[in-house]
Length: 393
Image (tube, rainbow, N blue to C red; front, side, top):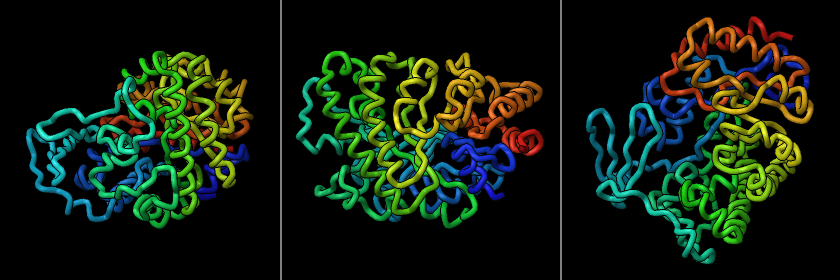
């Protein structure tokens, strides 16, 4: 059974030959572990694809999440200059923006003079002003500032026909380089879009002060998510992850989740389902109190499942209640059981998750959230060794 078949079996609750492994790596992990420049990994689709495939091959994972969309293949012509300061690469764009590339963290972009990027003001914004959806502070992960790419004033984020061909370039390259590996694409949850649009703190105020405006925007963002699902589905990924990192109890209550998150995400999940492809949702932190609300949507699987103390999910309890409803991916504490744990603690944690997740299939062994930049590569190889030894059916 190859890697693609192994993960497909787990997602469909069929019995694979062993428990599959698929960890999402933090961008900083790629920066530290690959031979490519961080700026090329982040901004060059083909380099990013090679980095994904290199790490999958090095560690022996069964799946790859393409968690960045493609970039224009000529990104360097948009650069004015670049230089290193104290080990950090600074990119100066002809548009006036500046991007800092830390060697072990996500990039950070600024206006000239390192001024923060502008975000929408929830008190004054006009939803009919399409210029707002091109603000440099918005959609950092999906586009890393639309201004950089000259996508044109006629571009409509909610119309799949207007997306450039390079949007799926990284996904297509990974599929070509790793045909036997399960390859997944990622789109933002409408709620994540909202958080990026206003900024995290201001969004939480907006939910209380301007709920009607939030609902109108969430409807727009749901249409954007669906459009991107349609674009990705031209390439037939094996699954689509809906990134909803900020929807746990650390940010919003269960009641707010039910009002502002679940109904809009469900529209995206349904869009994925119409293609006969599996969807799963990535929500960090404390989500144990809202698994029932997730179960009421159309999503097929849940990612992260952070255990205490980072989160509130006990895998045995979740599998007992929802093991037939969902496939699960994750639950290894990325900090206390992976980054800082000694070898004995790490081995015990991995074997414990295999023991709990393995029965009845429906489990993919993974870190709860992204593998931290400084997790030792030997530890990830060890995870695969343990799955091969103890995860066989």
